[in-house]
Image (cartoon, rainbow, N blue to C red; front, side, top):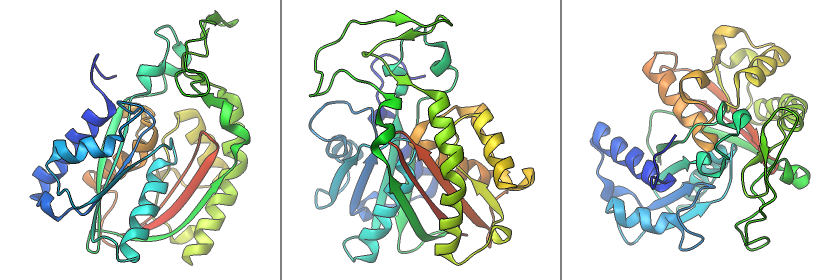
Length: 289
């Protein structure tokens, strides 16, 4: 969990600096910046603008925020690829950062045991270690209130002060993060198989062609159910949630980075990544290393 006064943009700036330093990358080559977060420093201005200045990036780049959760990395990567294919940019810095801990009640045992604060930095370029395949993206707003912080925005700007406790002693309040875990779990298990099938079909590959499955790291229980339902061998399903928690839009890039470090991803590896989360939104793609 982040410290008091530490924000998602702080984490994202740290991740970007690490990317530049460890790879000896010239930050002046960045010509597009996308920051995925639901934990902004301010209602306005956009975090991406302040990050541009803090990182010392060119002032001739496009910079904007994407307010999207668990599917944020997949959606952000699809945008990054789109602007490169369209010829609008050559080097896109895709940052994801989240501090859900700021939204949780201090006694919320159910959510505090699942979520972690974190950020990731990904360079999307005309050259790289992996080819980004085709995307499948979807949205169904029917689940919008199943993971929500109701107050603090323009719809309900003032605190509701409606704190109460459920039968298990967990706090419930419009002023804090609320998650209907069973509803999201059931929706995920119903939608992920079709999403996987659609992504495979769009990329012209089969389940047998995929060397490693790196999905959104929601929680261990869902991961195990998901793997069994899709009949994925344990050795081909990567899960590291026990080390980082559910860092929302950063789970997939963090997992990809760790899998590379562990030698699970090498040249020639085909990786399938899918995510489904709040909103509801979902997405998936294949990465060809």
